[in-house]
Image 1 (tube, rainbow, N blue to C red):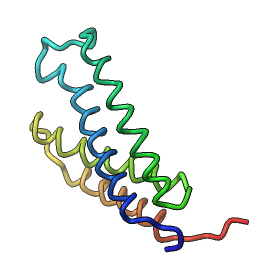
Image 2 (cartoon, rainbow, N blue to C red; image 1 turned 30 degrees about the horizontal axis):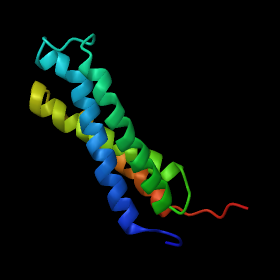
Image 3 (cartoon, helix red, strand yellow; image 1 turned 30 degrees about the vertical axis):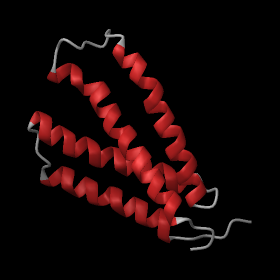
Length: 122
């Protein structure tokens, strides 16, 4: 792969995964602990570091792919789907059904198409 930086991809995956997990808790903790309703001020405070993680992750992801935006978007998408599936299964006992499993496979295929299918843009 021309202009590809594996270290930057690693940084992007760590930062975006952390952000996706944080967002899951930010959105769903209200159902685990009803004390923390959407009106709780803390959700707005944690939005700042979560945004920072997404911004830095996006920077490293786009840099890893030599300036291409689309591969990083799909990586963020699949990391969000994976973290959502795992955390929802763990905290809410909503298992990964065969339908969800097939959808996860399709997510991986989308990323593989983006990473492996190279077209020359003129």
